[in-house]
Structure formats: structure tokens, C-alpha cells
Amino acid sequence: MSATRSAMSRVRLLVSLLCLLASMILLLFSPVTTAQTYQKAVWIPVEKEIEQGLESFLRRAFTEAEAQQADLIILDINTPGGKIDAAGAIGELIRQSPIHVVAYIDNQAFSAGTYIALNANEIVMTPGSSMGAATPIDMAGNAAEIKLISGWSNQMKAAAKLNDRNPDVARAMVEIDTEFPGLKPKGTVLSLDAERAKEVGYADRLVSGKDELLKQYGIFADTMQTIEPTIGENIARWVTSPVVMSMLLIIGLGGIVVELFAPGFGVAGTISIFAFSLYFFGHYVAGFANWLHIGLFLFGILLMILEIFLPGGIVGAIGFISIVSGLVMAAYDTEQGLASLGIAVLITAVITFILIKKYGFKGLINRFILSDEQRNEQGYVAPKDQRNLVGKKGIALTPFRPAGVAKIEGMRVDAVSAGGFIQAGVQIVVVQVEGTRVVVQEEEQKE
Image 1 (cartoon, helix red, strand yellow):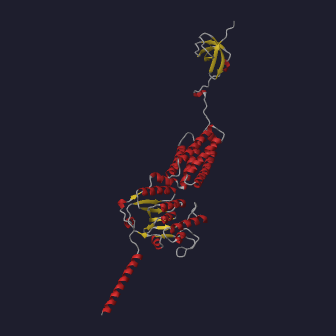
Image 2 (cartoon, one colour):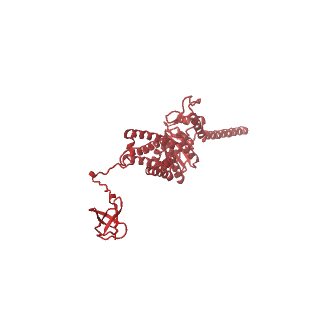
Image 3 (tube, helix red, strand yellow):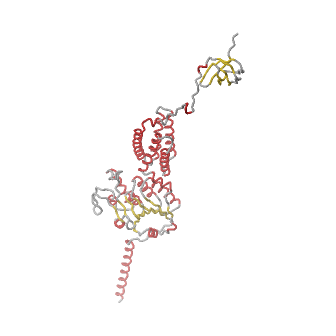
């Protein structure tokens, strides 16, 4: 009987241990449904095209979040992509941040937007959202050269490895000519919806929307601060776009040329000043331009104006170099600045050619030559040539102190004495005539 009880006790103990072990296994491998709670969260929108203006805004936003001692940053990503160099700088900013960063994708995070999301500590998506399709394209909309694709693929792969994500998935989003079995065939690029992203480990969790997202992290909506771009930062984002940069330079240079052919300072000159002001303002707010660059540009304009009055070419050449230096150095990238300026100069040359064909060189030259004539019938009378009075004699009608009036050959002539006082009634002689200035002196009396 005692042996039976002992055996039963052992069985119960074994069953209890097995239940405890099973519970521990379930606890270890069951999905986590709640995230760590945070005390201070900051919401930062990452919208529209990714470019250097966005990078500048995010640097300011991250700095402000650290100053507020935030322990969670939520990046609300909704972008079709953009410049990969700007995305690379933003990715570095996220990696170096001491704050926990969550990439929240409620709509789309394609191309460079995917790279930004992969650098975050977590990726959260909503049903219906997408990410991927990260192949770089050129200005014509075609896939970039192999060298660039290869480098970008390595960047995407490295970002995926940061949080132990499958690097082949990142490569499949970039490499068109590579087949990835189970992910995509050759000749396509991979994009993921929310469910597929969760399946391959590229979405850490799925939420129905913003409210559930905040609940997951223990954040109350009324305590979370949103950091939005300022008006100046929005302008900077627009201005630093390569297309807009080129357009502003075209308008600025073209306005100067049109103003040279147009009478007076009018609409073209005003538009030109506005375009250049917007160019420098946007790059200054974005943190790329400074007062040195603006000063170089203004100094160059001054030298170009001086070239009109100091012909020779040297002053104008220095002015041109100064203008180009200011414009290019103010750009976020020297190569892009030169490219935009080159396009602008080419189009401005075409505009100049058209204006010369229409108005000729005379229309330009007349801007710097006085064309008005003084005619007698219009009330203008040129001064009378009085050089024939030299050596003529007359009489002082008034005292000369030293100016006075003399009568010479029956005419009243305003004159000045060559030196000293001349009394009225004294005989005088004209010794010099310079323009309208008649100089007289007393006539020497013969004994």
C-alpha cells in the first residue's frame, strides 16, 4: 500500500513538472502582444519625396526630441521614395540616435523610404500598407547603372541585418536581374504588403491604426507631441529638389537677360531677384548655404555691373566666377549644383539667342548708351562757342570781384578776372575762353 502511494506521488510530481515545462515553453515561444511602455513619445512625419530638405528637418526634430528627453520616436512614413544619398544620411541619423525609433507605415514606404524604415528599431504596419520596390532609377525613369544598384543593394542589406532581418529580402527589393526563389522571379523587384512583410520578418507587428499603435506602446494621444516642419523648412524641402533648383536658376538667369533687352527695370528683373532670393533662402534654411555663399553671389553681381563702366574683361571674369561659386557652394551637393547651373546656363543661352535674333545686338547695346539728343526745337540750347573772343577788347560794365559783366564788341558777356579787382569802366581784354568761362584782365596802357 505504501509503495503504491509513493508511486502515485512520483507520477503527480512528474506531471506537475511536465506542465511547468510546457508553460515555460509556451511563454517563451508565444508571440508578444504588447510592447514596452514609454514615458515620452514624439511623432514625426516623414512625408512626400525624400531629399536633403527632409534630412535637415529630421536632424532638427531628433535634436528637439532629445532635448525633451523623449524615450520613443515614431516616424510616420508615407513616401514614394527619393534621393538615396539623403536616405543614407537619414538612416545614419536614426542609427546614432539614443532614442528608440519606430517606423510606422500606414500607407507606403517605397524605395528610399524602405531603407529609412529598416534603420529603425521596429517596423509597424497597418493592413493595406506596402514597402519595398527600392531599385534606384535615373532622371529618365529607367533603372540606374549596375554600379549604383550594387552599392545600394549592399546598403539595404546592411540595414536589414541591423535587426536580424533576412538580407535576401532587402536585396530582392533592389536587384532586378537576380532571382530569389520564394521571393521573386528574375526581371522584377520585390514589394511587400503588410501581411507578407510580417510573414518574412520585415514588420515587427501589425496594428489597425494610430490608436492601436499608441496603445501598444502605452502612449496617450494627448501627451504625445508632434514635431512638424516649419514654413521655412517646407520651402527648403521644395527648393532643394533638383528640378526646382534648376528651374529657379533658369528663371534667375533668364530674367537678367530679358531685363537687359527690356526698357527700364520691370517684371523680369523683379522675378529674377525673387528666384535667386528663394534659391538662397531655401538652401540657407536647410543648412547648406551660409552668408559667405550669399556674399560671393552679391559680390559677383557688383563686379558684373562694374564691368560695364570698366571694360577690359578682368573684372567681369572675376564677377562671373564669384557668381558661379556662390550658387554652386550654396547647393547641398557640388555635383548637383554644377549640373543645375549648367542646365540653367544652357537654357539661358538659348533665350539670349532668341532675343538677339528678335532685337539684334543693338537692343542690348542701347541699354548702356545714352540715346537721347538735345534739340533746339525741344527746348535744349547748346552753349555758344566763344573762343573767337580771345584777344578781343572791351570795357568792364560792372566791378569784377572776380566775376562781373563786360561789354565786348557790343555784347554783354559774363566773365571773370584773371586775378585781382577790376573797377567798372576800365578797359579789359579777353585772355582765355574755356567752354562758357571767359577770362579777362585789364588792358595795359601804352605810354
